[in-house]
Amino acid sequence: MKTLYYCFGGGLGHFTRFIAWCHTTGEKPLLLTNCPAATDSRLLPVGVACLTPEKSALTRDGLRTWLKETLFENKPDRLIIDAFPGGIFGELCELHELDSIECIYLARILQLEKYLQRTGQYRLPKISSIFELERLKPEHQAFNAQLCSQISKIELLDPPAQVVEPIARQLPAEFSLIIHSGPVSEVEELCRYALETSEIRGCETPFVVVSSGERPSSCLPSALHFNLWPAGWLITRASSVFSGAGCNIIRQMRGSQKPHFAIPFARALDDQFFRLASCR
Image (cartoon, rainbow, N blue to C red; front, side):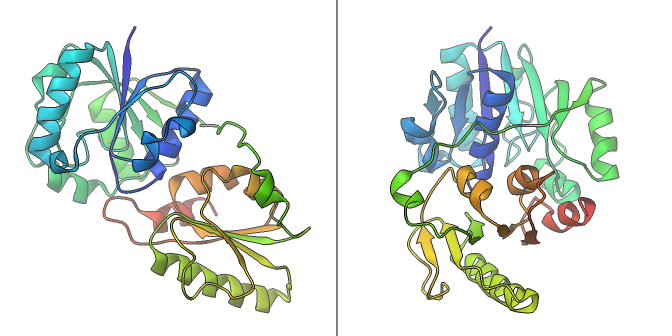
């Protein structure tokens, strides 16, 4: 049975979820994504390949054309659809090539009304089963029940992250971790929040910042900064963690006994405010 995994979005979240899916289920589907990190074969699970479209194809019509060609060339039996049941732009809607393919929807929190405005009146793919990855809003649960009767929950687990020894040797014995793959402005907001929170708590633990790209210009002066992914091993070593309220970091911190301080950030289709409120 040949399986394709379809995940398109603006950051590392979809790719992180894909790796967790592979580790949890033992599957090795062909990955279809626009995440730049996925083009680095060192970050992919062993035995997994990845296809990415040209940037010019990142429109509803462009992705529909690209996906039709990909389906024809690969002839999959299953398509796993991450986060957006009709694709991020609605490109999977009324795509007749999917009629003979088993479609599985991985449902995370979604601003459903806004998303359905993108898909319009187009018919969503026929979904054969749904895995709910976290607690969803009641309207999203009702929507899923209309899509498919085969609904279950799954707890995704990340593979053990390999320790990067040159970084490990620089770490203080105890530290507070500020970790975020979003925009620099959000990383800077997290840094301010971490500093204020630590002052209130009377905590003098040094900071380690993990974010994409170069060190933010207003990063805490004494903090170590690393552009590192995956960084799960740093989370396990930290004495406390500051982050956004994305699906993956909330999942990774679930059940942890260490202090976790999260700021929800506005997203076009995610609802980090609901996620953070629902896990407290």
